[in-house]
Image: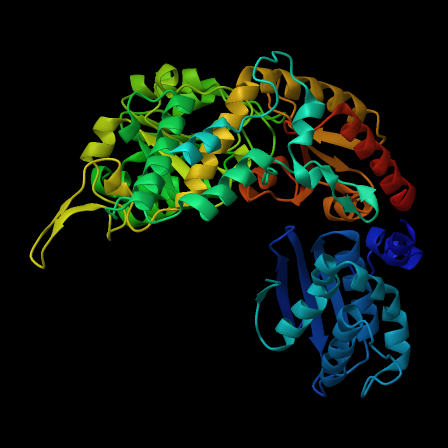
Amino acid sequence: MFDELRELYQEVILDHGRNPRNFRHPEDATCAAHGNNPMCGDTLTVYLALDDDGVIRDAALEGKGCAISVASASMMTEILKGRTADEAKRLFDSFHGMCTEDDFDMAAAEDADPDALERLGVLAGVREFPVRVKCATLAWHTMSAAMAGETEVTTE
Amino acid sequence: MSDTTEVMDMRPGDSGAAAFDVERVRADFPILNETVHGRPLVFLDSAASAQKPRQVIDTVRHVYEHEYANVHRGAYHLSERATALYEGARDKVRDFLNARDRKEIIFTSNVTEAINLVAKSWGRAFLEEGDEIIISEMEHHSNIVPWQMLRDEKGLTLKIAPVSDDGVFLLDDFERLLTERTKLVAITHVSNVLGTITPAEEIVRLAHDAGAKVLFDGAQAVVHMPVDVQALDCDFYGFTGHKLYGPSGIGVLYGKAELLDAMPPFLGGGDMIRSVTFEKTTYAPLPAKFEAGTPPIVQAIGLGAAIDYVSELGLANIAAHERDLLTYATQRLASVEGLRLIGTAPDKASVASFTMESAHPHDISTVIDRAGVAIRAGHHCAEPLMARLGLVATARASFGIYNRREDADVLVEALETVREIFG
C-alpha cells in the first residue's frame, strides 16, 4: 500500500514542501503570474526576472499549497535560474511528459536537459496519482503564463 | 398497476424494526462491497454526494425497464403510469417536508437551480434598488453567487451574517443586520464545511419580524434530521436528491403557495404553459409553471424511493445514529497529534472538518485513499468561509447512515500514516 506513497512523497519533496526555496517577492521581477488550482484552492505566485538576452536571472514564488505543488514550485525556481526562456519552455514540456506518460523516456526527451530532468524525476511519482498531476504542474503553468504576459492561470 | 405496487413495496429491512441496525443498512448499499487499492471502501464523503441503496437503484432500473415514458403528455398507458409515479414522488416530497400543498413542491435539477429560481424569478420581480439580502459567512457558493448576480443586476446590498471562530451562527449579530430594507434572508440550514446546524426557527422569527422572507439551503440538513417547513414557517426551502441517497440531477424547491403563485416563471418552454399563440402565452398553474421542459422524470421517482428509504429508517433514528458517530469520531480525531477540528458548534451534524499541522488536506486525502478511505479535501465550494477562518482548505470526513464507528477507527489509523510520512 505504501510503496507508491513513498515514491510520491520522497524526502526531497517533503523537504522542499516544508521549506520552499526562493520563497519571496523579488523587487526586480520582470514578470509574474498568479496560479490557482480551483479544485483544492492551492494558490501560487511565480516571479521571474529575465535579462535582456532572455535569460532567467531570478525565479521566486509565494503562496500556499499542498506538499506536491509547493515542492514542485520550489524546485522549479532553483532549476530555472540561468536558463533561457526557451529552455524553460522545453523543460516544462519534458516535465509534463514525465508526469503524465507511463512510457516517458527521459533520455530520449528531445532537447532535454539531463541534469534538470534528473532532479525533477523525484516528482514523476505523481503519474500514479492522476488527480495530483495538476499540483505538480501548477507552478510550471504559472511560469509559462508569466512569460507569455498573462497574469492569471487556473488548472482547469 | 401491479408493477407500480412492486416499486412502492421496496423498503429497507424490516419495517417493524425500531432500533437502527447499521449492518442491515450497509447490506442495502452494493457499493460498500467495493475495494479501493485492495482495501475495503470506507466512504466518508456523503456530504459531497451519498451512495445509493439497492432500493433506489432498483426503482430507477425498474422504471426504465417497465414504466418509462414522457410525463404529462401521452394519452396512453405507459405515459399515465410514468406521470403517476412522477407526481407520486411529488407527494412523497410534500410529505417528507410536511408542506401544506403538493403544488408547493417544485422539481429542479439541484439546490443550485432551486436557489437560482428564487433569485431570478422572485428576486427580479419583487426586489428594488437599495433592498438588502442577508446571507452568512458559511454559505456554499450556490447560496452566494446567485445573490451577487442579483445584487449587481438590481443594485441591492448583500449583507453577511457572521459566524464565531468555532462555527456558531451569531444570532445577535444577525439580528443587528436586519433593517426595514431587508427583503430576504438566505441561509444554510446545515453548513457543509462546519456541520453547524443554524438556529432556523429563530432566524425565521427575527426575519419575519423585520418583514423579510427566508430561504434555507437544506442540502446538508434533510439528510441528517427531520425538517418540517410548516413548523419552521420558512418561505423557501431547497434540497437535493443525490445527498439524500437518491439520484443526481434532481432537486427540490419548496415555496409557500402564495409566493410561488405571485412569481413569474423562471424558464419558458413546454409543460409550463396553459396555451401559446405567437401573440400571447398564458402559464400553467403550480407546480407546472416552474417546470419547463421534460423534467428529470426517473430521477424524481428515484428521489421518491430514497425518501421512502430514509423515512422507513426514520429521520430521528438516523439523527441519533449519526450523533453517536460524530461524538465517537470527534473523540478519536482529537487523539491525533497536530490535528485541529474546524467547526465545533454544540449543535452540529455529522461532518468533521479538520486540518493537520504537518500535511495539507490534499496530501492527507491522497495518503488515506490508499487505505481505502474517501474524504473530501479542498475549500468545499465555500471560499469566503475558508478566508474567514484563515484557511485555504480543510479535510472533511462526513458520516452517513451506512457508516460505523469502525470507519472512524480506520480513518484515524490512516491519519497516523499521514503523520508517519509528513512527521
